[in-house]
Structure formats: structure tokens, C-alpha cells
Length: 320
Image 1: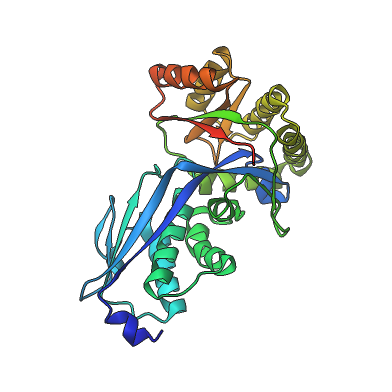
Image 2: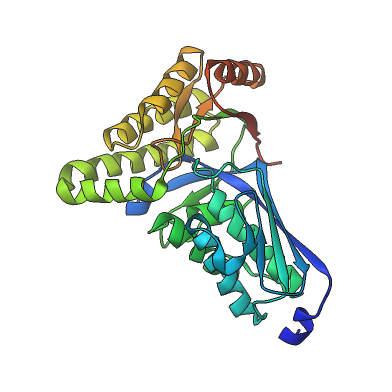
């Protein structure tokens, strides 16, 4: 389709994307270790493209106005939009891009990647073009690099997946086949996380004390390998222990904080098999492994009463 035809079309187009969670492997994954990530379909993003004459405008909960005047917090997605328009050879005019997201930003749930993927899909649909996974990841990386500095790529890969994935940098991703339903609860601490600064702080620690910090990173890698086995063999109690062990290492790396630690300890005291932060840390969310469906609902209620800002119980289902 020619750029001219696209620019004069009065149709609309939609693109959607769900969220993601990192189960285990945060921070170590940036330094060559594996991580396990889970698609999180309870929250997501829908983007609608509409033909409206004039400058390209962005319509979101945080900003409405011309794309080129978007605030700094939206520069990553603005750059992604410009890059995608250039790639599709669509003139940067006559469009309103409406972004509707239920993913709280700054919580380690892949908000920036989900928004980017939703926007890219909507623009490809607007241009009547199929979007390959390679194109999607390449274009989404524009926003992710701005958001995270040196992104591992795990967010975009998980958001485009429908099963848990095993991720290692510069290696093909693989799906993890689980043999039993696992019941998790995600709880929002109410504090924003800054993944970019958390990643930078771990990198700085690694330079200052390479042997000590590398041991911690390698340990998280080993725990991640063990967690894969626990998922595949339906070993809930073992998986819980591994999540607790990973949290200890993350605390040592300085990426947990008092609010997260308080929620984690409370979840464990109320019977969670394991609990840890999920994502960049120093704010954001925790993930807790419940004993079963009934316990998951009970624990979710208790976490909310205890002070979690939002709570989402969800099931990681075995594949049929």
C-alpha cells in the first residue's frame, strides 16, 4: 500500500498487547544468565489509530497533544511511533494515536513494552501490513532502550508469547511446558520502580566488586535453572523455596526495598510457598506463589487489606 493511500484513509485500526511478569532471573538476565517470564493477560493495552487531519497527536492518560511536544516521560514511545511511521513509509501527519492502558507504569510489569507493541501493531494494521515478530521486536526496542538503557529484550518477547518462556540473551527463546496449574498473586507496593537506575546500580556494583557480585548473579542463574525444572515437574513447594532464595540474592544486590520486603514477609507469613519482587525492584510489585486456588483468593484479600495498592490473583495454567 502506498503512503499516499494510507494518509488519506479515514479508517481506524486497533492494536492490543498484554502485560508480563518475570518469575525469576531479574537483573542476572542482563548479565548473561537466564530468566523465566510469564505472560500476564489480566492487564494490557489497546491502541486505536484514527485519521484526523493535522499533526500527529497522542491521546493517553498522561498527555494529549502533538506528538512532537510529548513530555519526557513519553519520549520513548514517541520515538517508537516515529520509527514505525518511517519504517512503514507513512507520513507523520493526519493521525491521532489513542492509547488506553490498564497496566500501571513503573511497576516492572512491562508497561513501556506493552504500549510499544500495541502501538506498533495498530500502525501495521492501519497500513494493512502483517507484522513479523522480528519487526515487532526491532521496533519495540526503540522504546525499551529509552526506558531501560540496556534492555534484556525479555519484556517484548514475553508480551508477544502465550506461554512461560525461557530467555537467555542472544539465544533462541524456548517455551516452558508446565504440568500443573500454579496459582500466583501479584501485589503492587504502590511505589514506582525505576528499572533503568536499578539496572545501572547492579552494573556499577559488578564493576566495583566483580567476583562477589558475579557469584550472586551466577547464583540467581542456577536458581532459575532449578525453577525451570520445578515448573516442568509440578514441584510447587520446591519452586516456592527457589523464589525465596532468589529474593535473598536480589536483596543483596540492593534492588529490593523496605516496602517490598514488608509485603514479601507478610505473604510468606500468610502461607505463601514463596514470594519475591518481580521486575526491576526498588518499588513496583511482588509475586507470591499460593498453595492452591482457595488460598490464592484468601491471600489476595489479605494483601490488599495489608496495604497493597492493587492485587491480581492469576493462574499459570498447564498446557493442554
